[in-house]
Length: 464
Image 1 (cartoon, rainbow, N blue to C red):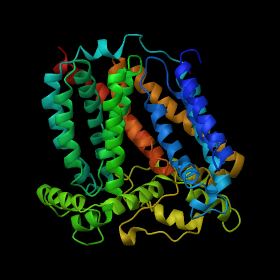
Image 2: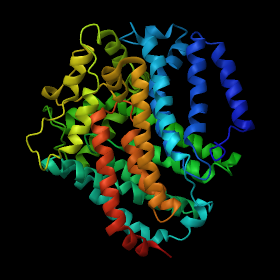
Image 3: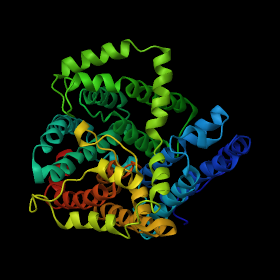
C-alpha cells in the first residue's frame, strides 16, 4: 500500500479530535465506527498522484449510511429513534459500513497493481489550450440536456445515448483543470455557474454533480499545496452547496408540480425562462422555518439504510433469500440489450422494493421509482455474511473498469477525465444492481468507441 495516500500528521490530528468527539456522543460506538471508516477508505482508494474520485464516491455512500447517526448525536437521542424502520437499523448500519469496506477492498485489490506517470496534473493540463476548450465545452453543454432528454424516447437506444451524453463530464474535467492551472477561475465559474443555473430548469436537477466533480478537481489541484487563503473560498463553496441542497429539497415538490403542469409525469412543459422565474419566486418565499424543514428533509433524503433495515426484517422471515437471482437478472440484462430484445421486461425498482421490504412505496403509477439500493439487493441474494463476498466481487468489477480506463488513456489527466462518468454512475448508495451492472458495461463500450475513433482527433483540437 506504499503508493496509496498516507494518513499524515494533520490527518492523524483530525482523526484524534473526531474520535475524542465520538466517544463523548450519545451513540459512542456507532459514531466511532463512522469516524474511522473514511480513514480506512482513504488508504484503500486514494492513490498517490491520482484523483480522489473513487474515494469520493465511497465517501458519499458513507454519508448515506452515517448521516442520521450524527443527527441523532446532535439531538442526544439513541440513533434508532431517528429512523422510520428502526427494528433492525443497528444491524443494517454496521452491515452497510462493512459493505462499503468490502467494495473498497475489491477495488483496492485491482488498482494497487498499476502505476501512472509521476508527472503532475498541472504539467499535463498546460498542454491543453483552455481557449480552444471553451467552444467545445459550450457545444457539449448545449448537447448534453438535448441528448439526455431525447434518450428517454429512444427505446432500446436510451441507455447508450444517455451514457454517451455522460461523457460531457470528460470535457468538463479537462476544461476545469486547464482553467484552474492557468488561473482562469473567472472564466470557469462564469460558464459553469450559467450551466448550473440552467440545470435547475429540468425535472431532475444535476447541480450536485457539478459540485461533486468540482470538489474532486479541487482536491487534485490543492491536495499538496493548500494554503490558508484558499480555505475560505473552499469553505464558501461547501456552504453554498449545502445551502442549495437544503433549499432545493424544500421547494422541489412545488417546483416539480409546476414543471410538469400538475400531471403524473417526469417531463417539464415549461420554457427555461418560465422555469427560472418560478424557481426565483419559490426561493424568494423561503423563510427560516422553511430552511429548518428543508434541513430535516435533506437528512431524510440522504440517509438510505431504512430500506435495508426493513428488508432485514422481511427477508427471510416472509420472503426467502433469492440465492443470486438479482445478480443473475442484472447480468442477464447485460446479455440482452433492449435494442435486440424490445420485449425485455421493464425495470420496476418500486415493485422490487415492495416485494422484498414489505414497504408500500410509490411506483410507476405515480411517476416514481424507489429502489432498495445495490447493498440491500446483495443481502436479498446472499444474506450475511455472503453479501460481503458479492460486494467484494462488485468492487473487483469497478476496479477492473477504472484500471482499464486509466491505463489505456493517453495520459493521467485524460484518464481521470474519462473516469468521471464512472464516478457519476457509482456514487449513489441507492442505485439498483441491475442498473449499475448494465451501466458499467455500457460505460466501457462507449469509452472504447470514443478512445478508438474520436479521442485522438479531439485532443489534437485542444492541444497547444
